[in-house]
Length: 78
Image (cartoon, rainbow, N blue to C red; front, side, top):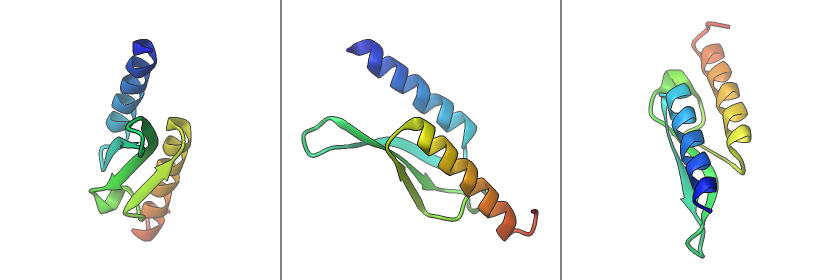
């Protein structure tokens, strides 16, 4: 079971390194277990929505890439 958490910790580290304009963490469910993957916006150049919540790290990565595109369009870069 620790191996699963080690892999999740590594994935959170990768997401944090890739999307430095967001604070990224795992939500805690009502039963104390880890839940959804969450990113809150800290740099408006990195996204549009203040909070992005997804069920998996892959979904969060894709959503944050879309957020970066939306931010670029908003700034007139795309």
